Length: 450
Image 1 (cartoon, rainbow, N blue to C red):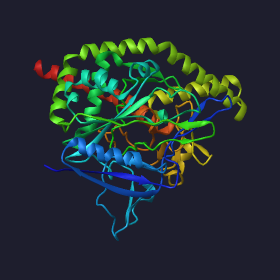
Image 2: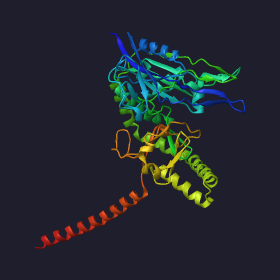
Image 3: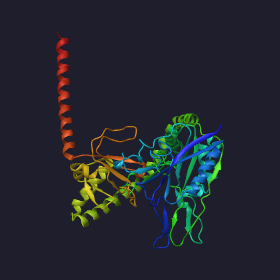
Image 4: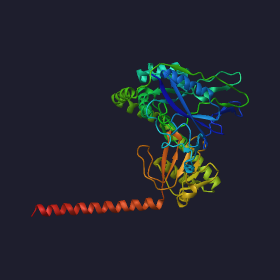
């Protein structure tokens, strides 16, 4: 039986792979790829007699990617847009013109039926030593997590960072791997990834790391959200600066079977239910081990923010400390209010109050990441209007700020006056509810006593 599948390539004018060059000390320095806001969308279709054949064709496409091309595993509405032209990528606010698509889940959703899926593995330093090649990842991680991987057709390739080294130096151990497979129903790729995340936690790979602000980030080798169909997969070889030479990132293809979603879902769910106590204990231990590092990171961020407020906004250090601590609390709580400052990619910034006072001015405006040591542009986006929540994606009631960092997160944007009014109303409601309940109890007692 002939197998057929499709995916998409984004072709843009910007650099869509890492730039690896030397820093002032002669060490390798990596600049992240640029997330495209525009470009052509190219339909890629494959057919082969088996899953391994499909992955071989996909491997050829990966090796042919230019530095200005990036992979989307979701599909286009049709191979060509109306007028027999390539579809064009646009931003969400510019969507609507004929032949344009924004990179949203509404446009690039899960593929129904046969599809190519991906898993993104990020390795801690010790993991790089233990998993120095693709075979080790398959034998020591994937197969123990689910024995069916031993027969599944898998394509494994080291991540882009492994594609460069100092001239004359040793090749680095891979800091991560991309694992591709052919699945019988692409709608189950995301839930399988999340189940695998918990399975790896049960196997002892649960780790908690501090963010720049001291948030506790859960990690378990596989990125639990990177398999979302609208996410970009950067596979092109890195661009290199002087003093840096390329390293071949060998592609390994093993196994022969199509991944059957029902089988792996059934087995992983059963194993995770069985080991629920182990998973909880492993995360608790990881949280405890990371607590000092998270507290230190939070204290460091607050001190840095105090310095910034004292110098830039001329606040006294006591005033600056109150503001910094309030910002840290708001960040943790997921609600940002009036005086929280949001930076944008164009070099401007605005408070939540300013944004909510003039929403049209800030609609879909993008900014750098909030909680990374090296902020990346284009990671956050403001939606300053009222909108319905979406529990399936974690999206709260609007207005909100969304960030792709650390697996993605939302913060509601609220006015203090509205929050205070809601709290006052709730307090009055609780009082009234109590009074009514007491009165009903009294009336029932009167009725019982005749």
